Length: 138
Ligand SMILES: *[C@@H]1O[C@H](CO)[C@@H](O)[C@H](O)[C@H]1NC(C)=O
Image (cartoon, rainbow, N blue to C red; front, side, top):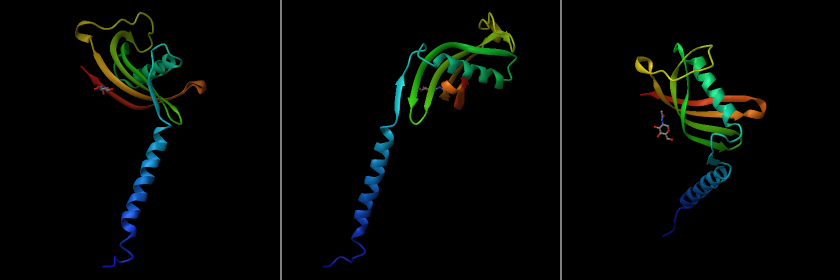
């Protein structure tokens, strides 16, 4: 039996498509580096400051929140730099413009929020942008 000429290219085409897809993925992967970094690593402090300023600016709460615990910091490098923060933040006794002695609230006003942020960071240009924010209060 003879295969019809137009049937032959199909498996070949599938193989080519798969190869291109694999190559594309492999190519992308080589440009992604994700590593955990400590809180005192370069640029982390400034980026965290930006994140909390933004959080408080956007929050309707009468009081400011601040970082109580840093669970994880990851730095991701592709064609740009991005930080992933896993933070525990708490409502403080400081109202919007106060910045000193901001102790965590206790009693009825106590509030703890777990947040994950993804932040675009170009610290040398003082440019930051929150790309993802996911917070759950407990
Ligand atoms: C934050 O991300 C971690 C995984 O890194 C996940 O376990 C946790 O549930 C996330 N928390 C929130 C508030 O999204």
